[in-house]
Length: 181
Image (cartoon, rainbow, N blue to C red):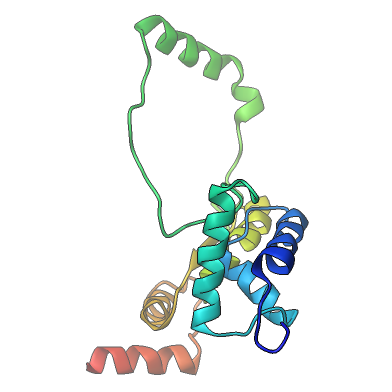
């Protein structure tokens, strides 16, 4: 950043490409934005975030950056056509699942535990890297996303604590505030 001028094409876009290559997963735009802010390449403003989003959208359209390089959990889909093209394929898949059951069987790690580990994240941007680690241990991960989810987390921790653990005073206060409104 030189006297407020940002060289989006010559400096920022190549740096974003380098950053994308450094991740073992697809990061969110916000994660890359904060990396650029921490390197003092762009200011931490709404305008620079929106400009970065716009410039990188163009870079992806022009194939300067891989169009699928960013994780976008805000837009998702579910469902669609599934099934088998004919009964023989269905039967074959069922036979295969029995044939290879010894390779795919996995016992629940948490079924007999008195407490379960659950990770709640305040920032959705951290979801993918944390999930990558948590999956190794069959740990659930939730992205809280701000105050409304703090209340959900509070209610969850107060009423579902199987180990008798008390929730933090901050969470308890949040529930009281939420329930009073």
